[in-house]
Amino acid sequence: MKSERNTTNLNNLLSEYMRREPSYTFRVKTEDKRMKKRGFNMIKTVAVFSVILFVALVGVGIYSKLPQKNPTDLGFMITAYASDEMSDKGKALGYKVTGLNECGPLVTIEEDALHYDRLTLSITGENIESYDIEAEFGELNFFDTKNRITSENAFDAEVYSYFAKGSKLIDLPPAPVNNPDETQLYWYPDSRRIMAEMDDDQEIFLQQKEKLKSADDFNKYFSDIVTVTVRYTDGKTESAEIDLTFDSKGYVSAVVKSNSDLLTVY
Amino acid sequence: MHDVFSEYVKLYSEDLSRLCLSLCCNTQDAEDLFQETWLKAMKNFKRYDSKFPFDKWLYSICVNTYKNTLKLHYNKNKALFNSLEDKEFFMNSIPDNSSLGVAEYLELRAIIADLPKKLRTVIVLKSFKDYSLKDISVMLGIPEGTVKSRIHTAKSIIKRRLGE
Image 1: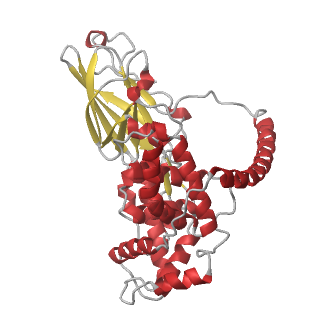
Image 2: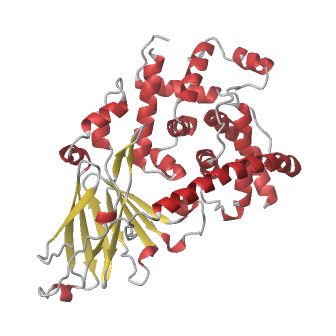
Image 3: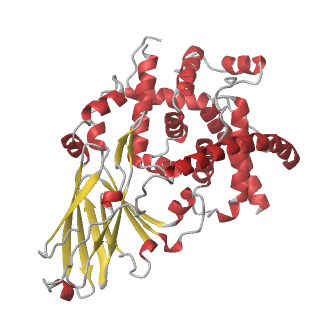
């Protein structure tokens, strides 16, 4: 077919196509028919799994001889302290940035599209009432998993927790000091800036490779400034800015600045 | 609970069939996926909270089963119809004034079937029920930016191949 189609036409075509898919309505099979077929499928699955297991065991044998990194959670931690502690300039207080050296790249070019990974943030400390967080470009996702229903299905877990998303989230509770995993906060790199420059008539993968060659390129599209404002129980507030920048391989680093002049970056 | 689940099976089997066919592009694998999806839904049904839309819960089980399957022969059998009579019946049912005629339909189907699995999954979900990027990212457990990127890539490939 030689005719040109614009985006609106393509969306309409795809919708029409989905409506046109022959809607064979399959029927849920009875248990015995399903079990017979599952028996045969089970044999094939076990055979495939055995091969994979053998390859994996060989791989582990080789890998275990290589030098190992210490496992670390992805992301960095902002720990804010009570204001009276903050006033003591002799102490190494302030904001800690840890774990970034162990993070993989947050933006990678896969064979079909850009893949974005997320950075885990944690706001913990004593005497924190709540906090606001804002990203200039990226997206923030917050989960309060206190009431999460235990499930292996990630969809269930994400739907059933309190879930907030956006570039600015306000009045979030801090992670409890005794159980910091009770809340989870993620930052995702912005995808809009680079997508705005894609030419639909050219191969996307090649365009992305061309546009992401240097650290400057990555920062042009993905760098971000995240601002955290912490409110203490005594009514005082404190703000910190986290500068997120990238290298030419998509790895991120962070520099934290606060308004208290008490800053130690580890 | 059994009656409630049976009601859901009646209500959603047609759309689930449609989704499975779009993902697998052949009836044999689509039916396997259909059965696996309902089996998993049944096993996890006591965890389902009726405050949330059942369709998204069900279809997320479907696409994640499709995504994670170990079976290697999805899409190798390209028979979309069970018989020649079924095919002819379906083709004759498309009205002459439809924006998507028979030839265009078959062409679009071939293009979508040839897309890489990851791209086909997102474009099918987007076109199937016009789910938002957020919905698709939660259903597939991938970042929203990745969903957006893959939809963009899939549409570019489809547009380019339609124009060839």
